[in-house]
Structure formats: structure tokens, C-alpha cells
Length: 266
Image (tube, rainbow, N blue to C red; front, top):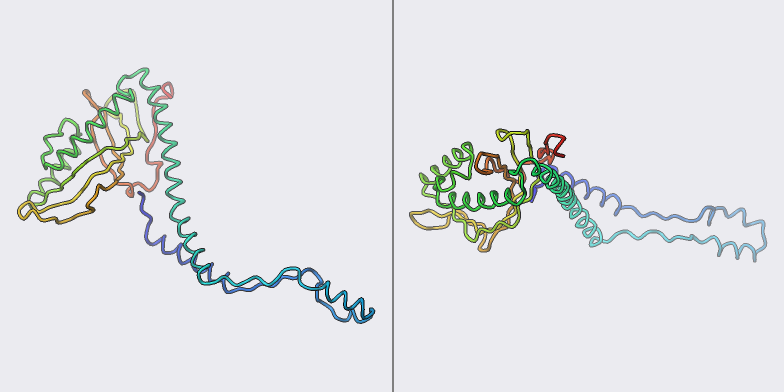
């Protein structure tokens, strides 16, 4: 899930607290216009009329009650939830729009280029997902070399070699790909610069052990953890291969995921 920047979050909370304190410290008493105002205007009238007027000049609204401590807390909690929820909802709506736009463009592209066939492309993505995860777990990138770009293969190979030196092994159990949603793509008529960004949703049990002592070094949970990432696939002669992985909080502007294809395909 997208992380909220800590500094901005604290500023928002302090602003909310200030507003609540200002309003909770005020008591406002509004009466109808002219009600209970001038006593001299009633002195010239009869006592019965004065008595009647005094009854009719009572305030129409009672002074507002000062919010209790619990009411103020409830207001704060509701506002905090809104502050947290709104960016998440906006992100979800924008990703859905990109998804439907991508699928529509892919359908048109596939009429001229079979590599953009949705089902075949999703199969390549699913195969790459499990092969790359297995290679990472085994610290043997050669197991998934044909499913990765040269760039990512080199990057992951360096990381796994470093883990071997530290005697660390990342255990990934019960890995399940829940969804792979296209959210950005580029097609320039060839294969050299074609790519697609996919919103990955998955779950697994993820922890790290020291392979000499078999003790857990870093453990997230005893149950499977849900996670989301952005995966970039590039096109090769044989298949679509994984080229890059971005964490959700690395992409703060969803305009990063462009949909760029020749007009005749869109």
C-alpha cells in the first residue's frame, strides 16, 4: 500500500488538532434579531403587552453545547481516517482507469502484433513471476535467466552473491500471484523499446535465515503477507521478460506509467 510521508502526516494531524481545539473552546449564543434587546421600547406599552412581549422575546436558539472530550476525540479519529483513506482511494481509482485504458490499447495492438495478445502476455508474466521468485529463493539467478533482462539479471546476481557472503537466505513460502494488472505500456512499432508495466498483487510467507545456524534473522509474520509491487516487462524475440521492479512507495506520481502507442493502434 502506498506509504504516507511522515512529515506531511504529522503536519496534517497538528492542523486537525488545532481546528478541533479552536471550535471546542467556543460557545456561541445566537438569538433572533431584536429578541430581548431594548427594554425602553416595552416601557411605553401596557403591562399586559409588556408581559406578552417578554415571553415572545426569548431566544429562538439555545447556546450551543461545548463538545465533550470524547466527541472531540471522535472528530479527530474520523478526520485522521479520512486523511489516510482519501489518497488510497484516489490511487485505486487512477490505477483502475489505467488498467482499462491499457487493456483497450492492447486489444487494438494485438490486431497488428500478436505479441500484445493479452492472454499470451499474461502467461509470460505469470511464468516469469514464479521463476524469478524461485531463483531468488535459491540464490541462483541462472534458474530464471531467460525470464529476466540482462540488466535485472546482473543486479539480482550481485544481491544474491552478497547474501551468500553474509550467509543469509531469503525464504519465500506459499508464494501466490493474486493478480497482474497492466497499467502502462509503450509500443513503437518494433521490439527494442516496447515495454509494459504491471501492478503485481501477491502473497507469501517471507523471512530470512542464517544458513549456518538456521536461525531466523528477519521475520515478517507467521502467516502469508500480502504485498504489491510494480513490475516492468520488456519485449524480446522469444517472450516478455522482467526488466525492473519498483516498490509502491517509490512511485509517488502515477503519471510515471505512460500509455504510448502509435495512433493507428489506439
